[in-house]
Image 1 (cartoon, rainbow, N blue to C red):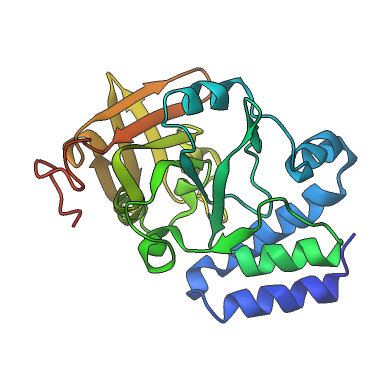
Image 2 (image 1 turned 90 degrees about the horizontal axis):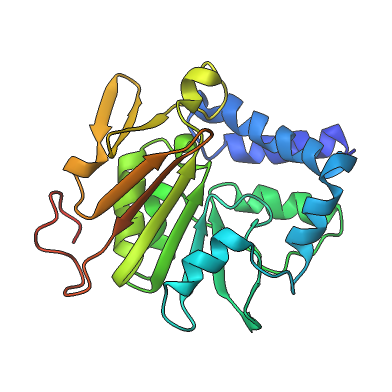
Length: 246
């Protein structure tokens, strides 16, 4: 297992950047990944994430089939190693990964001499456009990470700004994760879907995302809340969007 003193140094660096209220959550997230790398039950998943020639799974095959050839994909909140495969029908995906803890994650990898096929870049989800160019992605993907954001609505607006016309945000999260985790660590927001209405609630607020963006679809399976937000193909920023996305 990674030396605890070395991990504490990484945590101290993270604490210098983030408000005190998030420190415990960041510490838990880094410790989670420290343990994840050392758990033999994750060996096959680790090998998949490290494989530069790993094919995409069935879900990603369907997603990419609906996108233009050579589509550009962003994985928001990707962690130290994106879980997305790298090859789609014999072609390499134009894949970018981002995370607010990227510097710390990259040190974790370096300490284990692990070389990611797609290195995670530093970009808080609330400030994506400061680090990545607007209107350059066909698909922005976020799995079990938006509930970690300090402001998920701002994060969605940033994701939207990154989309090409006709592009799509794809979200996949456990329902009501903040309640299930008792607001532990970074889990501060609940996602839910009822009658096609995608909601985000927490910290005394509740958003119906369908009322804030157009072209929202959502469904709840036994295990997940899956939602998509599409940008109109006829303009860069849909003039009929219900919040300012310029």
